[in-house]
Image 1: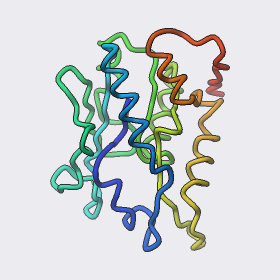
Image 2 (image 1 turned 180 degrees about the vertical axis):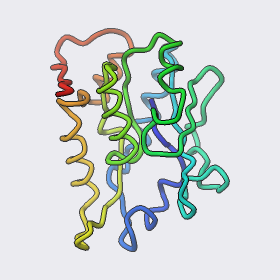
Image 3 (image 1 turned 60 degrees about the vertical axis):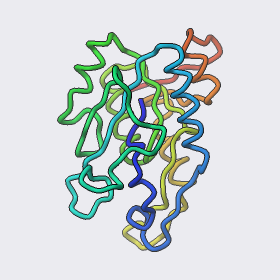
Amino acid sequence: MLIDVQQGVDVLEHWGGPTGRRNNPDAESVMASLLDEWRAAGRTVAFTRHDSREADSPLKFSLPTGAQKPGFEPLDGDIVIDKDVNSGWVGTQLELQLRRHGINRLVVVGFFTNMCVETTVRMAGNMGYDTYLVPDGCATTNRVGPDGVDHDPETVHQLSVASLHGEFCTALSPSDASALIHHDIDHIDRVQGNE
């Protein structure tokens, strides 16, 4: 599942303020590699696309920045879920589409780690999906707290992954995610508590 791989995520001053910056410049290459492998294996690919309710958001379908990043356009047969909130599950047919395809395992990448990725992964874990996150295929921006502190994007990313791993999903390397395309992996310590 690729979450919100849209051009608007690159409008960094919107997400991180005047000092807007992001972590993991290699996220798109990891996503693209996994996407190519998934498609080559004939596995189902799902996309969420964000059409924000917020008037000033760059993630609106009516704006050029609402478009998918080049190379991440859905193809015929892909599951495509349009959403207008952080979660891919709220107000959408995501669960229905996954059930229709017989899918109970999700491998997730996308934007932003601490926003739509985290919200969607949390709910997936709670809903009983066998959920995996590939942190190297995710990225986020700095966040300015209510106290004015500008939190580094890599710290925001790592804390989000730490909050998810072991409770809502299992975090995986890209190579382990690739291996899951073909079979279960015995050496993975699957940790998903939902407590």
